Structure formats: C-alpha cells, structure tokens
Amino acid sequence: MAFAIDGAEGLPLAALILVAALLYSSVGHGGASGYLAAMALFGVAPAVMKPTALALNVLVSLIAMVRFYRVGAFSWRLFLPLIAASVPMAYLGGVLTLPAHLYRPVVGVVLLYAAWRFFVTARNAAYELAQPSLPVLVATGAALGFLSGLTGVGGGIFLSPLLLFLRWAPLKTISGISAAFIFANSIAGLAGVLTKGATLPPALPLWGAAAVIGGLVGAEYGSRRLGNSMIQKLLAAVLVIAGLKMVAT
Image (cartoon, rainbow, N blue to C red; front, top):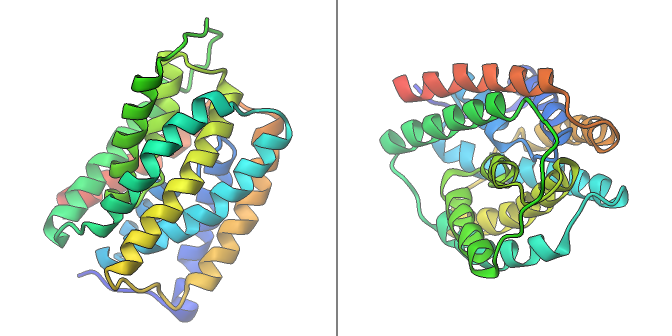
C-alpha cells in the first residue's frame, strides 16, 4: 500500500536521493527517474511522487546546467527550438493526471526504457555530427516536453540518448543541453501539477538538501570528466529493479 514518508522516516530515502542526484548530475541529468525509482522502492504514494520528483529535478538540473555551461558544453542553436516547443507541452502534461493504476506501470516502463538506453549509451565512441532541421527539433521538443510533464521526469532520460543516437551534438554538449532542457521542463511540469492541487511532502526540505549536495558533487565531476560507463551501468541496474517493481505492483 502506498504512503507518504515524512520526518525522520525520510532519512533512508534522502540517502538514496543524494546518490541518485550525484550519479545523474554527472551526466547532465536532474535525476527524476532515479527519485521515482527510490520513492517506488519505499512505497511513496503516486500523488506525491510526481511533484516531488519534479521539484528535486529543478534543483539538481539547475546545478548541472550552470556547471556544464561554464565549461562551454552547450549549444543555443539546438536548445532554443527544443525548449520553445517543450515548455508549453510539459505544462499540459503536468496538468493531466493518470489514475494510480495506470501511473505505476507507465512510470515503470519509462524507468525500464531509461535503463536500456543507459546500457546502450554506456559505450561512448567518437562520431561524426549531423545537422537536424528546425521542424524536427521543434517536434522533438514538443513530444519530449509532454512526456516529461505527464510522467514527472524532466525529459533528459529521453533527450540525451536521442541526441546521442542521432549524433546532433558532442557528448559533453549533450549533457549541457539536457540539463537546461530538464530545468525548464521540470519547472513547467511542476507548475502544471500544482495548479491541479497537488501538495509537496513535509520531508521535501530534507530530500532537497540531499539532492543539492549530490548534484553539486556529481555536476562538478561530470562537467570535467564525462563518460564513465560504469556509472551509467549502475544507474541502469537500479532502474531495472525499480521499473520492474512498479510494473508488477
């Protein structure tokens, strides 16, 4: 049975959130899928999971965005068309609420997909860049933004593998773009969720502090030394466990 955790009971979950923030921020992600995985393992209520994951995502993706931007790992040419279409769609997705019996399997599939993509992209070989068209960038942003708001993830778990697969940017630049994309869409998705009367848990300040600590350490490491395939494989293993748990319950 799902429940909301608060107070001292949230300490073990805070530890997992710190680890997730550290690992995800090292590759330019906010960590929402990791927070969803951690909350799923602790049986947090679906109504609490979505706004909490988005709120933590805002904090960690902001840290990652600043770190990667400062080392020049960013592209306005790719980012602006993506974000212009994704923000309104993320808000729309945040407004919509899936029933609990549908939310868990949907998020479970998202986590399993993320795990698979992490395994696939763990081998980061050099590649020749391709130039995407403006309509393709806009359509991609719209689709990922809606999915971001609907599921409570920032969209980075889909954007990063997609950019890498399509070879639209160098790996480190992909991390910078993803961090900014996640930050903007998480704010839009959270705004949509809160307009529907969702509330944030009492333990959020504790979990937020843990996420910030992890995000600072991970983003500092990742912005200077990116491409640790072991981190991605460990993330994938965690997501597989949590994703299967959510699909099965």
